[in-house]
Image (cartoon, rainbow, N blue to C red; front, side, top):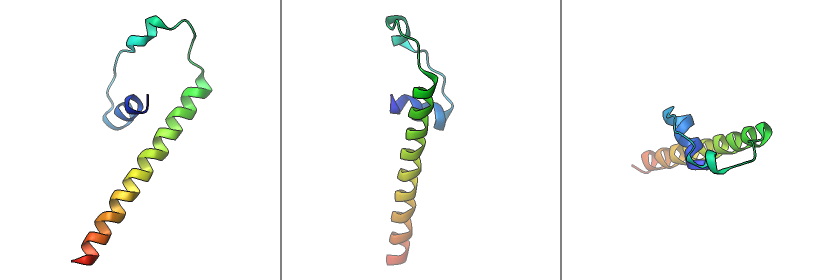
Length: 61
């Protein structure tokens, strides 16, 4: 699920939800909102780690 959200947020891709027809329950708006926020935080954390590594590598040179 996180990968799909990352693809949608980063690349702006639109994908058909193949599992949609298999589900009988509807998506909870609050749950989706929470999943998106979690994905955003993971992406931000990953970016911060990459930037920190780049700064450390440049400082070591």
